[in-house]
Image (cartoon, rainbow, N blue to C red; front, side):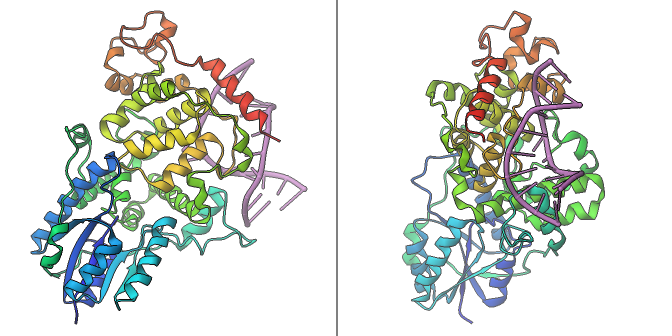
Length: 457
DNA sequence: GCGACTTTCCG
DNA sequence: GGAAAGTCG
C-alpha cells in the first residue's frame, strides 16, 4: 500500500472524522498536514483561534506518536509537490460544503488527477444534503420551518471513536521550507479570548458535556445574556473540533424540551448552509432583490462608534465590547446590535457582516449571511420588515438587573437597575459615556419604517 | 384556499 | 390587538 496524505481543513479533530477514518483504513502510512493559505489576510479573531486549535491538534497527534505538519502556501502547488515527494496516491479531506470551497476542490481534484493522485472526500460539516431536501414543487425551501420539518427526519448519526492507530510519514525534506506554524497575534490582543474559550478537540468535548448537563435549563436561559446558557459550541463547530453529529447525538440522548430547542438551533445552522448552497450570492446581495433600491447610509464615524461600543445605547455597546473582548457575542445581543445598525443607523447589513467576520471566533460565512439578512429583513423566510428591535425594551426584558451591562460597561456600574438601561432618561450620564444615543430611538425607528416602506409593494 | 410561521413593537 | 409579507402543505 502506498502512503496517503490527510489534509486537515475545518475538521480539526481525530474523533468522529469519517475522512480520517477512511484515510487510516486505506494507507499504512499517512502524511498529516494543515495548509495555511491565508497569510496575506488581515489577522482576524478566527486566526487567533486557529493558531491554538492547531497546537491542540498537534499535541493530540503527538500523543499518538505522529506529527502534524503546518505548512504555509498555496494548496494548488503544495499538494502536488507533497504527493510527488512522498509517493502518496491519494489526498483525503472532509467535504467543506461551501460553494467556493467545493468549486476549488473540484479544480484541485482535476489537477491532482493528472499526476494520478486522487482527492478523496468524505464526511462533511452538515446533517443535511442540500440537494436532497426540496419542496413539493421540487424547489429549494425559502422558509425555515418547512425546511426543518423536511430535513430533520433524515438526520441520523452514529458517532465514531478516534481512529485506533495511524503511522505517520515524516515530511519530505524538499518541503521543509514550507513549514511555518501560525503565530499568535501581536501584541496579544486576544488575551481576553482565552478566559472564555479553550480551542481544540478536548475543549470542544468538555463544552458539549457541560452544556448537555444543563440542557433542561436551555429554553429559559438561552435568551439571558448574563447567563452562560447557550451552547457556546459555535467556534468549535466552525473549526470542526467536534462534529455536528456528535452534538446531535448528545442532545438526543438527553432528550426533553431543551434538546428539542437545541436541535432546532442546529437546524438553523443547516438551513444557513442550505441557503448558501442554493443562493451563493446571498453572501453579498440581498436575497430579496426588492430591497436593492434601499438607500443605505455610509457614515464611517457612525460605523466606528458602533464597532467600538460607543453608540450611547447600553445593550448595544455592551454587546460590541463583549465581541471585541471575547471574540463572541450572545445571540440575543447579536440581534439587537444588528437591528440597531441596519434599522436605526440605516447602515447596509454588509457593513455589520464584515465586522462580524473579522471579530467573531465563530464567524461562518453561511450563518453570518443568513443572520444579517434575517435581521435586515432582506433575506429568506418571512420578512416582517417592520420588526425593529427596541434595544431598551430588550435590555429590560432580558437583562433586568443589568448584570450583563455592568460586566461590559464599567462606567455605568453605579447606575441603578432602572437607569442603567437608558441612562439619558435619568438625566445624569456618567462622564466618559455618550450623553445620549447617537440616534434617537423613536426617530430612528420612524425613519427606518419610512425607508422600508419606500421599497415595498 | 387557508392557517401557520424563532427571536416585535406600539398603543 | 393590529400591523402585514410571502412561502408552504
